[in-house]
Length: 397
Image 1 (spheres, rainbow, N blue to C red):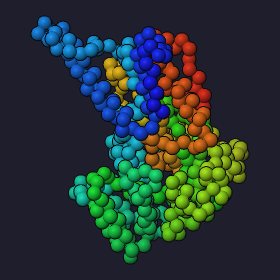
Image 2: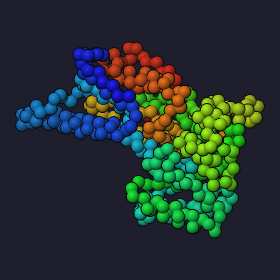
Image 3: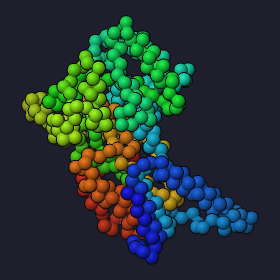
């Protein structure tokens, strides 16, 4: 969506000449935020210097406006992008950010599967030696020593490969082939080797992952969308069969090319409620059936908070910039058979299930965009915006 409201055509208030709203590809937003940041720094530097004497007055006159806060700027750009959140939306950076914040031992025990960062042609700088040691120490039984290797900048399931490191006779040859492939890549973007989640929870005998949508508003309030989806494999689960990637990788773009895509569920998607059916036979200590809301959702909220707190110091929100930011994130999880939730990755430009798209788009406008316009009108808080399908969660940002 790309909209503009011009002064004289459809003015929403006397203090805004225009609004640009960008939802989608982040390259435009990145460039816009960086330009606005540089202008903001220049405005503040000149405004500050002007108080020291008349020598700086001529510099100040070159600028079109003084250093005022965003709410009084005549033109506001609203973008679905936070400068700094790449530290969790790129796979390798997410792991590095979490480990720097909490330590590797805690991260790989509580948040995400053990992961190693691999750089093309930079063996001295990356973690391949530690990864190879982990492979050698690993359990020989499948799937305890299986790994997923993927590009940190990859999307739509491209370039993902699976490694069974349980067989000592083929392990060295297989890892050499993978490392040679990474080293042959023309780009220097890192790759990650992530431990496969052994014994995943299954729905109807098939593997799935969970996609949850999280909205970070301009004031750093965090919202979780009430509806998420289980993205299903279209093949029965078999941990020993690595020849069929569709058994193990539930990415929508990969599954869409499979012969059984859509055979069991429309779009290979089920609501979170489907998890409750799998938990019906599991009881709590008090004898009540386990449920998604009581046993999985609290873990989800905790992990979302853990990642965003780790990223807090890198999120750039300049009160003097003409750009206001929010960001819709897609969190992907896998549940193991012990009902432990594992974060696989965070998507900065997440796809949305077709049946949720129109409603979620309206809710994003209500939660993330309208409060910015109200603030610019000087009416912040006068008419609280509805949150629709979003529910605010406490992440202590």
